[in-house]
Amino acid sequence: MCGAEIDIALWQTFFNSHINMTKITRFAPALALAAAAALSASPAQAQDSGSWVVRARALHLSSANSDSTGLNLSINDKTFPEVDFGYFFTPNIAAELILTYPQSQDLRAGGTKIGSFKHLPPTLTAQYHFTDLGRVRPYLGAGVNYTHLSNVELPAGVTVKKNSWGLALQAGVDVPIGNGWLVNVDLKKVQIATTVYAAGADIGKFKVDPLLFGIGIGKRF
Picture 1 (cartoon, rainbow, N blue to C red):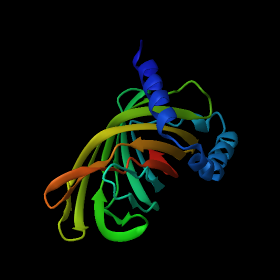
Picture 2 (picture 1 turned 60 degrees about the vertical axis):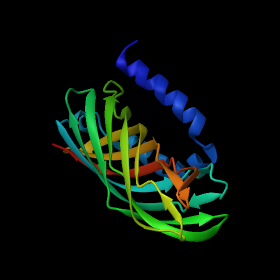
Picture 3 (picture 1 turned 180 degrees about the vertical axis):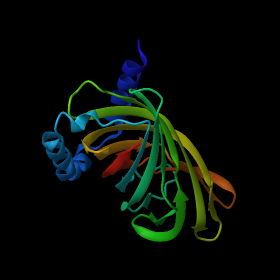
Picture 4 (picture 1 turned 30 degrees about the vertical axis):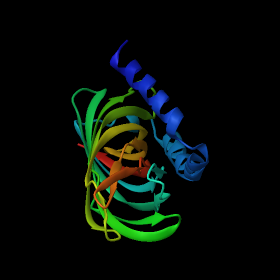
């Protein structure tokens, strides 16, 4: 089995078991925008190429809020800016580093706010880009996420593990629009979790495991 087929099988298995389709429907207008860009791009524009690509996206975080502590923990969904840097080793194989600034989140128990924290979640993925589909360039990716929690404010006696490593899976499409510019739509599922302690005792895990939907523009160099 080739690398592309492995990525496709992994993506299908993970996303089919983790994505709530009611959340996907929220992104229909953005997907329609990308489709319109694809239809308007000329064949000549679709030949834009380069080893480096820089994208800026508006990113929406939708948390899975999976909790085994018995406290019914959850965080708020939010939208924030993100930038990524990609390097193409070949026309099909690339690596992407996804960055943002520390994001503030409210932590709730049973719907009531009990604290807050900031998280910084850089993510590195390896990607396979499909280059034989004319005006669009879809891709699949897999990699690793590291998340660090800071400015943690919780009730007395409650603490959390501040570092998290997890799998990141990705699917997206670049639509060249000429002179190296492109429109991008991107979807990621990322494993982010923390262990919760009360009076020093491990009481369970809180899994954020967000679905991240992004739309933006990029430039290839």
